[in-house]
Image 1: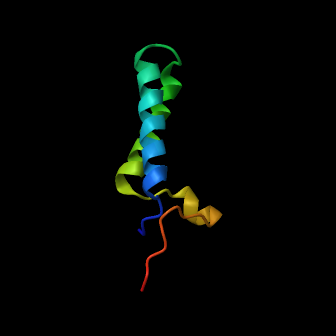
Image 2: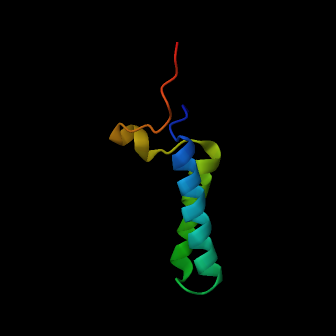
Image 3: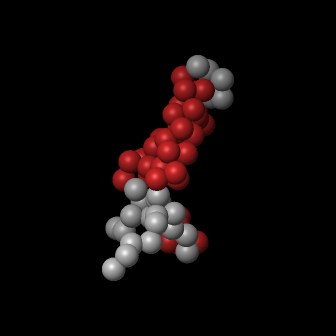
Length: 64
């Protein structure tokens, strides 16, 4: 598994995931807010399984 989630992308995923979970715990959006665990998990491992299928990578290019 090659890392394909860059720094800014990770921060945005963490913020979105925490916001969704927070809204769920507050009773604002219901149980669908637990989907916020997905962006948190992808930010934690640095890999998004959808990105390779779409040909996307937000990681900076590594210099050889």
